[in-house]
Length: 224
Image (cartoon, rainbow, N blue to C red; front, side):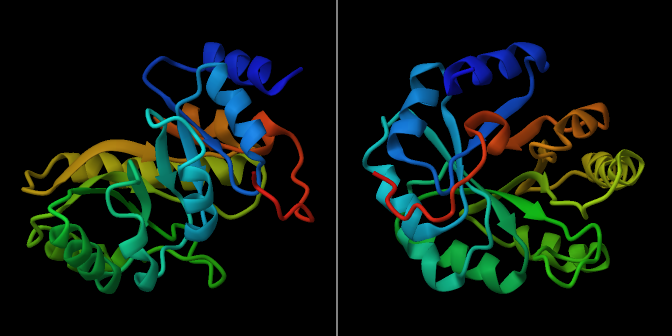
């Protein structure tokens, strides 16, 4: 099936309230445009430079999601261009986002990324450190937390379900509190190999790359 056919097949199979993000990292502009022409509007990138190369080449009603680790020195380049930052994982990064967005009178919509599997090789804040980050978010004027994100450890279906359920429990618990700058609207979980399990556990935002575009060829350097 073509990219467009795969996209529409998945879109028709998932609940209407679920946002399907086409993870377009390493993909050609032509591939992204094929998805766009089939109805896709949400695209995910994990490197600022690659995102910027694509930003001006895709229609402006596209919604760009930054799903990778965001370095503080790169925040200034994405102000006003990113629909949702999925990877807020520290107070240090929060302060930089607040500063850069305030300077442009823009609002940053973000998700708190949680390292739910406590993996040393992955970014994300530890669950027991979340309170300090949440309190810091409440002091901001230009950052709005819209939910949570996680990338879980590789494992079988049972293991995946366990981690997704933990994330949903944290998400639901935070819904019980009234915050100024924090609302639990989006739970970004699940990728190409485990998105069905994520949906079963309450995710309403999924990030699919190979499932839509096919296997990646990391040798390709050109994006246009």
